[in-house]
Image (cartoon, rainbow, N blue to C red; front, side, top):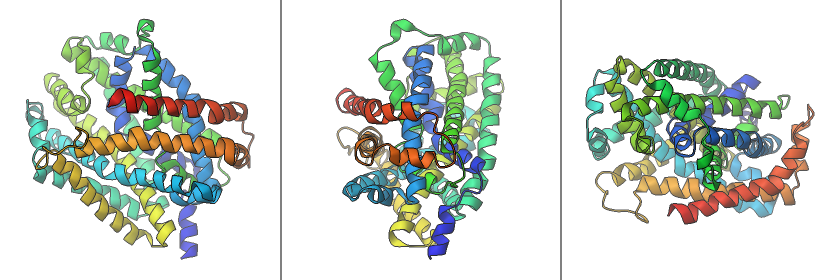
Length: 450
């Protein structure tokens, strides 16, 4: 048992495999639809500039902390915090609960995307663009359960094969394909009549719209899109080879994640801008942007059927790379905690996740009249995990590393095989700036969202 666990902890066979797998975790649904409409809503180019500044400071500091914790402890997220300081054992449990909550409803949404991919691939794109198609789909538990089951099964197959044969191998294929698809479709979108006006709207800085809300929105998007405070980066860090450079790996993950988010904006903003006649509200449609507005956009353009297939294939790949990392994080916790082998651990995770996912499905169908704080099950799970639990975990991690274990705990791990060039900035960020950012996110979630 011990030798098997050790082999899995050293699972990634190369630095490239680690970077692509971690990038795949970071690149998810939030990059594809949330980033574009936030950029359009909060000043276009000024939002992009703020996002980039935060990415190389705030995001970098939190991500490198989690990866270093994972590699130094060699443990899953629940036990990693305990190994640093036993008083922080509850933090490990809280952090471990986050992927348990997110994985089921994330796979439900992944099933929705899979449904739209099959609709466009089967020539039913026009029907998918009709009014009421999305509402009718999610209100019927049968079809949503089927696509949810398919999506979570595909995720489980990759995880069952392990870190190197499953996650790393798949990431080396899926991530280049994802990048090629998003570059291709973004170039095509810019050839549409009037699309360049939409591009200008997307990237042109609007200083008059800059405010503290712009900073909080960019900070929140960065925080969620980089898979921070979910236990994922700690888990993947525990699989990272000791000879690989953590600092350069994090920079490469950030670049990949930011490029995909920016290119997603180049697809969605110009296309919706042209379709809506420049109506900003069309971009700020939340989930409706993905499942209502965009199918209409594709249906109205020449070659839209093919574009729709390529786009939803892109989104399925992005969703799956994230769901794989979520499931792997939970499987890793079970293996560390119970000493189980990978297959039974994975089957347990699938079973529990399927049951929890059914709550999200029923919340839009047979239990649609039942809400929690005026939210459906899926919306509540999303709110409590992303807006409350994750900022608390990140804040407490900053306190643990900044003031209890001291920043040298992370710095020593990073400096084992290289010079930690950003050490000075890192100390300031993790001790002062990142905790303040977490408090801002938590405050905005509690008092500006509810």
